[in-house]
Image (cartoon, rainbow, N blue to C red; front, side):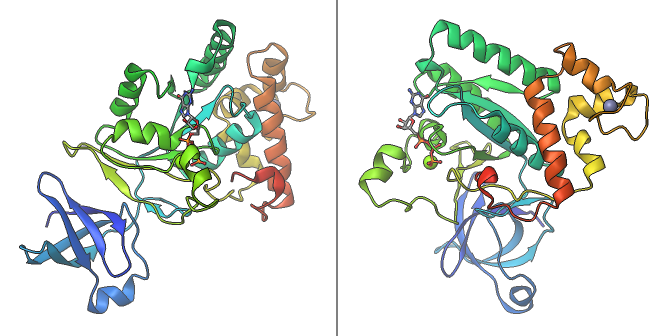
Length: 306
Ligand SMILES: Nc1nc2c(ncn2[C@@H]2O[C@H](COP(=O)(O)OP(=O)(O)OP(=O)(O)O)[C@@H](O)[C@H]2O)c(=O)[nH]1
Ligand SMILES: [Mg+2]
Ligand SMILES: [Zn+2]
């Protein structure tokens, strides 16, 4: 049986997208309702259409999730587009590296965007390019964009093609603004609007998957302070989620080198030679400490975004 995605959760039913046909209301009944507490947008289901005229259906089965983000709940994510700005709001490397770390542990592929490049002087653009190149060298795909530059919005459109994409990143970087460029017929609450309405109204725990008219991909917006949980892992594994550090570790003198004060450490040598960024290295050490302490408290001030 063909499987379809849930794209929206309503009070008494789910909205299921049938590419090329439209969207139907679908409900859970009987045993399967007992077995599944709450379905999420992104879940794959099979359905029986019982009233084609009213577009109503019953959900017959739910596929096991490959992954999920908890707040807002989205299942079976193909990629997260992680959006930051060079300025307004200012880049925060510790936040970026923590986010990339958490995504790596959760095995969620991340592509990076630096938005609002229209605000930058030529000099700032060059600085940003250098930063983008550093992340590219680590293995991340990085795109520089602006909601005011249609060709860069088109780049994002291409990145989203045929995938379920979640937009994430700090408040104010332009997630909703970029969504509104990608889906011009829909309405989004961007910062200008949310200030005139009541504060916090857009920090919803729900999200909707938007579909492109030609059915080629789904995108979810998320509010700035939502994010994945800070995972707790074995401190000795932290380096493998800082991919360039994990790679360099192969050359360290000691097999169990943690790249702190050990002699013959290839990671420290590369940091001293400016081949591994000292920001990344500092953030590696900070996460190492956090994992040693046991990362229980995601709401810790330092981790406000995570
Ligand atoms: N100059 C410029 N301004 C932008 C760009 N993208 C967004 N903005 C502005 O940045 C502000 C914040 O944009 P939002 O889209 O609300 O940001 P957000 O990431 O959705 O923020 P949260 O919903 O709070 O997480 C708004 O005033 C936008 O007009 C851009 O590319 N260039
Ligand atoms: Mg927003
Ligand atoms: Zn080492």
